[in-house]
Length: 118
Image 1 (cartoon, rainbow, N blue to C red):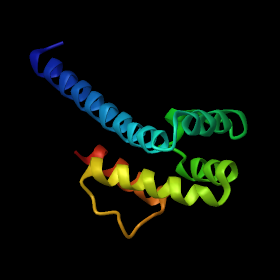
Image 2: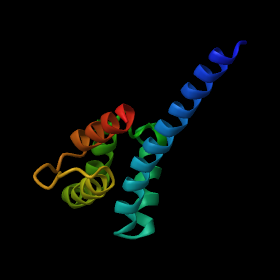
Image 3: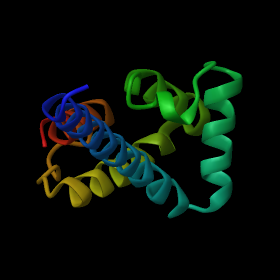
């Protein structure tokens, strides 16, 4: 492998690592928002996501609609409050004004695109 090929491989690896860090940070926003209501809220949400919806925490970014359905199925009308808090955390992390947008699916998609384009 020549020097140019090594440099290209390294750049791709750094980019993938940076993207992974950014995606994990978005999941961290979800964690922090749920923790605002107590650690048991987060545990319950992730347990139901796994047990009922057969999705892991790491799959939230790939399937935000399923996560939204999980929140609604778990917390009923209270899901809107959780969703608003999650959207707020994502907005802070990504430096986005999401105050008028309380849809968690759109917020996650917007944050993902920002991280992947960075």
